[in-house]
Amino acid sequence: MQQVSRSPVSTPGWRAWVIWSVGVAAYVLAITNRTSLGAVGVEAADRFQADASTLALFAVVQLAVYGGMQIPVGILLDRFGSRPIMTIGMLLMAAGQLTMALSPSIGVALVARVLLGAGDAAIFPAVLRLVATWFPAQRGPIMVQFTGIIGQSGQLVALVPVAALLHATTWTITFGSIAGLGVLFSILVALVIRNHPPERGADVSVNTDTGVIRVVTSAIDTGVGIRAAWAHPGTRLAFWSHFTTPFAGTAFVLLWGMPFLTAAEGLDTAHAAGVISVYVVAGMLIGPIIGDLSRRFPTYRSLALVLPAVAVQMTAWIAVIALPDTAPIWLLYVLAVALATGGPASMIAFDHARTHNPSHRLSTATGVTNAGGFIAALIAIFLIGLALDIQGAGTPETYSLDAFRVAFLMPIPLWLIGTTFILIERKRTRIRMGLDPERQR
Image (cartoon, rainbow, N blue to C red; front, side):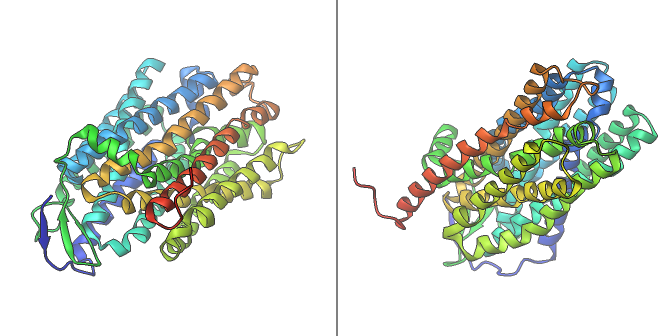
């Protein structure tokens, strides 16, 4: 790996901010694409005459492709950089939404979700790479948080304008319009995004302590890189942190939140949209706080930030489904705020991945980490849909509060499994770093 002894610029220039802004705007559109079906889940069930398991299958296929593409995308990013991968990702999402707009059947719609998941998989890791190559390392945690925070506003776009457009026009016009935006953004990304600053000949990772600039390449064997990343307990800690923190919020917003709030809890569409909007806004407000705390207390992130976020989510979730009757509106807002802690807390996982892996494995380790939350989300989404179908409550006409209470038990084992592995890998990581003594055999 080539090394260049050149002092890094401690403050990013205007071009870095322009490139990051375009990257984040593309991420906003990616989130809009990802959550567009969740905002119109009831309409999708009616259009395709889909039961709960089939409706869940749309999200499961999308997330499975997203999660499965994380490591390949990471390897491609290590080799080719952000610009071409983001451009291809935007075009794939546009193709997926156009297919969704014209889909006459469930089979074609599933193909659309495959394209959408593959394109979506490229965007967030590519933007994280832009942060690593255009900004000083000490700004990493807060820039990652801001990237995640701003990107989540795409959920509001899906929740309000997309739903309103569907109700005002047709399914084809709505999803065709999103596809058109994807094409426009692919052109914008290709024109504006650059892999690295012009004064450098390649993607780089800067050591801010020594001033050494390391050229980021992918000269190592792919299999060796993946195994080497997973072999470090810090990468496994990152994976399980991302597995455990955001999946419930993802499942809620991506698919099951609106049906639960409207059909089970009895809210009208406006109030249900308000609850989900609180989830998005709360995440945007909580993110900078968690980012700053993560920067200040790097050795206590898991105990002080990640695990408390898991505990808050699980407590609020159980409180809602344990009530004998519908939950008061204030408790649903509490649930939304609790779930909102998961997104910012999951960003800490990328700090772990960046801290414990060398520059040539940066995107590969990020891909391994990013897959965690979406593996958990697709498991939760599928199990909730399956539980509804088993109870005979798999369509909008048969949704009930009691059926959702049982179905919403499905995420609890995932939280418990993830928490267990976070504790195990945190201990191993601290031993590896020399912060804790080696265990006696």
